[in-house]
Image: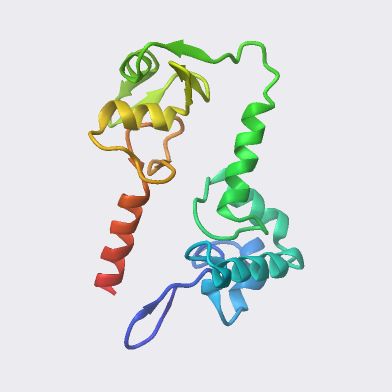
Amino acid sequence: MSTTIFKVVKSHSAPATAARAKDWRDVALCRSHPDPEMWFPKGTDAVSMANEQEAKRICAGCPALAACRNWAIETREDSGVWGGLSERDRYNLRRRARSRSTDPAVRVLTFPSVKDAYEALAKKDGRHVLWTGGNEVKVGKARLTPNQVAWQATRRRTPVGRIFTDCETDGCVRHLNDQVIRQAREATRRAAA
């Protein structure tokens, strides 16, 4: 993160590099680009889409492309362009990978209600609630992800936008956020800067 005397400036520049061995982040082209915000388009307007395409073009020639892309997918990075993939691209990759599963043990379980699905497949484990089912369940005619089931079963409002986990514990469906929570956090960060 770059700082000036007057304010903190957000920087895309691959994850922090202090106090670690040299790796792909040291050769990433985004580290030296004059407009780091290009990697974080703020919407779907023409300017944001042009910035996303330009960031992807720069990524295409980056020597850290593969390592950056793998890092973003493995850590489930939920914003910005990383390794030439936007957040939509990474989401669609994960979705396609789930739908191509050929494991016969992977089946979609059907439940009469979201509460029933949550009670059957979510198990409390200390501070976390771990999902023990597959990547998808069927409630009535709707197919839902574990995050959607957990959100609907434990919250009193409909989520806005996609639901992401805030937790680094694999399978945790307790620590979730939606667009409302993410926007509130961003507003708090801006106010603190």
